[in-house]
Image (cartoon, rainbow, N blue to C red; front, top):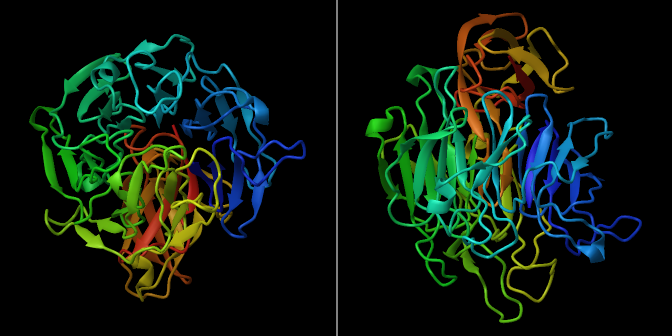
Length: 509
């Protein structure tokens, strides 16, 4: 399963081609739809290519791009999606649909990763050429490409040879830095590098993260921690979970690695306990207050399909208890256990922040087809909305009334410019509020990989009371290395409590 928030009340859900109960009039199973967070209604989005195990992200014009996929399914009349690109321009009038370019990429990509670059283009990395349980040299695809680009040739990426066999869905983060810097952090298996995508070369090979492997099928999850102007947007990467063995019976990793990349020559991993719970296949969601929520996954096993023929599980012992990570606390006090769910979420589970500060959770399908009964972990069709602890507070919540002179809140993204001071009018019952502001991009989520997810704190220069509440002057990030020029959400918090709804913006050069 794959998800992306495309509008304040819309999520696009992409599934594999399988015997889903939802069907087109010609009998073909539905593989993607738009879900309305306000009403729970669903709008089917037709496709012809198999989207299974793809990646994706947003580009500068606001288009969501889905990249890669899987084999042809003749029975269901879906063509192969290995080299496909799919495009949708998000809308709120139910008129937008996917467009497909079946040969949009230069090569087959199954289990690739994507990230939006500082110029608003999409960097598409790796994968294998065909479906496989564990990648191998024969079908490995150690290349990358950028979309859109005039160069239609894939570029060799030796790092994805060196990190075999656990290098599918590699972890990528855009490095903050000067405007002209073009660096990416790339991680696979246990290793990581800093790669200059413009110069097409490795800048730095970083120390190995000891212990577990952290990418598919020994799957962990990663975030770049919130970027704060008062810390000069210091880049710190956090990776948690995974497994030391490619073994369904092996206990998952109970560790995290954290690395400060502000000085590459001194960068080293700090390894610590993963909140007291071993976990593989976690989801990592940056919340509205900058804390990181880890949820879903298992304490035993690895990612992959269960074997129906041999009645064996690839993963077991689901972890129902989320943990909250606070990077502002000292080591040993950063994790907090939260109330457990009652729904196991194993392979193919997803989660994302939504504009009201809650977390949307869905998925869990560890069989090769939809199976609703008779197995330990049936295909999970229920969705959940998780309320983080900040929504249990009695503190007043902000309502954003206007942004940059526009009162058309969440009727479409409001365009703002880099380094611009925008006027934000808010109402709140608290007479002595303590405001903070941040831009969030929720990313494209699949297989515990939260592609392009990003949190950037914003400076509030002035706070002026008016007859309805307050007017804030909020300063946008300086350039695309801090936050790419794509759709984002402006969150205004009061004493750490998120606003009633974040506002959809579009950063522009």
